[in-house]
Length: 322
Image (tube, rainbow, N blue to C red; front, side, top):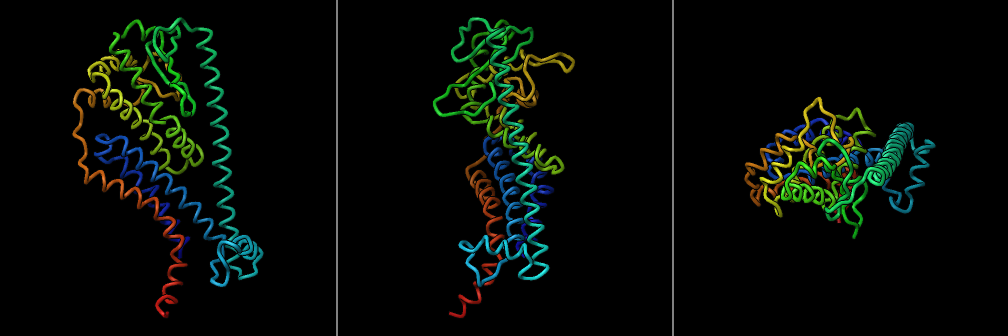
């Protein structure tokens, strides 16, 4: 029963919950909370898939100790020492786990290598095309289009944000606007937005046929920009960030000074960001926030509860007979 519940739960998360979350009206009012919901949903879907394979691989026999004898249980099931259906289920579960692990490891390694290469390339560009920078914590490179972006890489404790600003942005933006842009990029660094978007991109790349992961990637990349705007607006005037966003907006036919895939001040949906900066949405009430947190926690806990379902059902008669 548990594998069926878990597999069904995974499908519901990918095909029903993900589109519902993407279309929810509250996410723009609480982007940080929405990012947590997306991380919870994607984590629950992945955990549910892993537990589906494990429950198929493990033979849930009450005469075995689940922890100490787990590898014996797996081996017995794979060798058909219980019965043929258990052997088939074990083979299916092991195959699913191997495919899942292979996709995550291969794509994860590929993305890490690409991110390191991109970081090294951008640092080289800063050394070659950089100019003396009066901006604290930021490097300036010569480029004809205004842009500002955060160098890719994990946000390690104690490490300052590595921000690159083009010379055109420095020339075009007023001092308060430039300060708001830098605050936006520092908010990306402080919020660990690189790691969050990297995780969602990994899931989307590893499982391209699962629409929920690709939808989550696009939504999280949009939400981290809203989150950074809100954080920057706490220390700078919203109108300054809005003016900077308009100044750095690029026509569709114009080449941008921002390399693809980076957390840039001009990223996301510019119209949505501009509207939120000029007309901030009403914050969610505490009861609604608490309900969303509780729902996210419940979704994360559900796969483990389903995996233990068969064991729990088996324990109930024994406990009642005591």
